[in-house]
Image 1 (tube, rainbow, N blue to C red):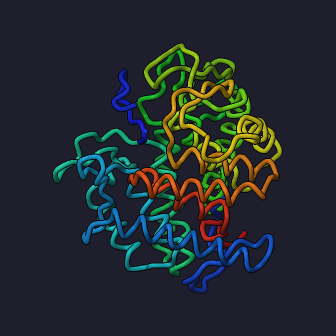
Image 2: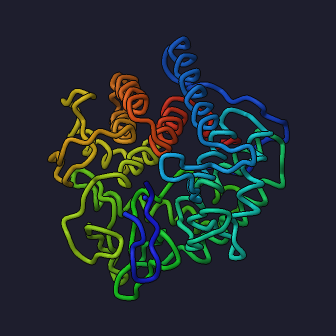
Length: 372
């Protein structure tokens, strides 16, 4: 459900640190907070969700296929599979997915192609969320499986992100959704592509402070844009860093909406949030705090007003992230259970991926940066 855009047109409307130890880590710890029994239960649910995603959507050759969308593959899907395999400590499955990605999606510029169909890449334009998620997976796996070569691969992707998917807006460093997104008059921005944990991790692993500046810039922009919900898409004034919600990737105006992209913002920023991110996510939580999990719909105006009656798993996961960041941890398990219920009722590649990643990120330390 991720969006890729070409130079002037939107095509579809979808801190890991250096390894602190040389010892092989084949299993990861459960959540380090709360009741030990509850932590084990959360860890079990997270690993089961990860295996369910991998078992359902991974081919024998290591391709993550969107069976509900014609059996195609996108770069983000390969990254999701790598994250899930690294989290559960499955070196064979990780290598299988990474090898397919490396041979079929990784381009000469160091970034992942967006779309693969029928044996070939049909849209080579990269998307920064897939690139950062793949880099994160490689960093986690490098420590978990004692594979320095994977760390090297992660840093190469990170360098390519800096070279092709960043820009300046005044004094702010901006992560672009892809190389196409610098329009001169404005920068296209997708809040859900920014993962401050991954960017800080790349800073630690590489020693390059630009990654940390991108995390800070992304946090600043998301704080601007969360009103009280963040938009799927925005534009940024390159002169002063002012961010404005827009209706789509190719738009320059519009009220903006919280639909299928924006929920990932709440999940990514709920992991180790700084005070600014926590404030933004607390505003988002205020929209849902008194709504029953089953009544939370997918689409919302940025004011929080619900639109339509669609229900999707990722929205429930996102609200769990907002609740966690706001300190309302008692609501998290019920919201994740609602996400699992929705995905069971209406299974989808995207829902299964974010049910697994949401549980892993919000309730365990399995994707937490090693050595920190």
